[in-house]
Image 1 (cartoon, rainbow, N blue to C red):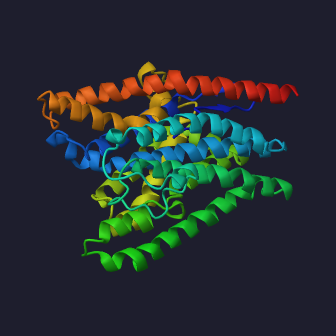
Image 2 (cartoon, helix red, strand yellow):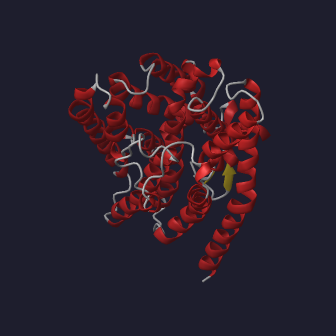
Image 3 (cartoon, one colour):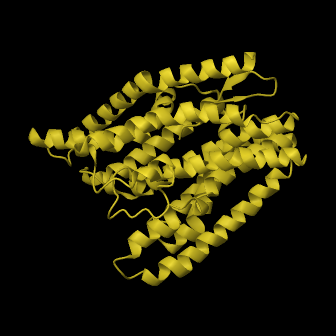
Length: 382
């Protein structure tokens, strides 16, 4: 969720992609709706719409794949060398400071833990929490799994690009994405068939599904690879990018239909249909929607909104802290006699989540970004 929402265009200027603001705001809103079901919540919040909110993370993956790979594809296409050091400086100061703040809160204040225990601390600091994650034991900050997937993606992607750059094989990186997509699909199918399906009618099923299918990085590359594929095709095949721009509304409509099909096919998260059809359909659908939203002729490319812009800016902080805040606020309000399942408590929780994200933004994120920018400026001058 921490990727930047601006990219370098063909002439080297920074252009704000308002369409991605809208998508990022949608993604965090959908994730928030999904996770709120695990706390006290109004009855209406348990419907099919909220249940499908797990796909908000997949939308974030598509965004990350498009933005991060797009920056690297752009560098390679111009024959320039990728600066791994600069890449990781950007990622470190954007991601790590708020992340460490939340981990510190969880460690220092046990009352902030929503349920269960923290995973072993070394898994948080190595971003390997998503491997072997057992929610029955380690329910606190379980949503950190998606950050692990992205961090592992960030670690490998520039190294792969360096290899391709060394062998002067820039365009062939697009084909590598296809190979990885097929491999990811096959591994997920085998994991389902041999490690999960035999336990379908047992109490172990849910835990095994999460541990062997839902959380591991090698099973959740669909969105990242779809986003990276769009970035690669747009970079190396400008004719296709022009075609998408010309027919952006048709592409948008097709993407919505694909996501709707996934919604119909996957009423629950942990089903065979979700594993085999849902993950790729969701990634493809969101990818098509993204492709339309970054097309200059599409209204969402030009439509600027202060609301979605603000939510997009706060989305990383919201994602990190929302469970802590909902947990603490609900417990406090319950002591004051309010019903956890009421609409008013939900509204108060959402307001507090936004307020907490704003606090993290101005106290932690912005100072960290100033340090990052200073280091990058100094490095370029040298």
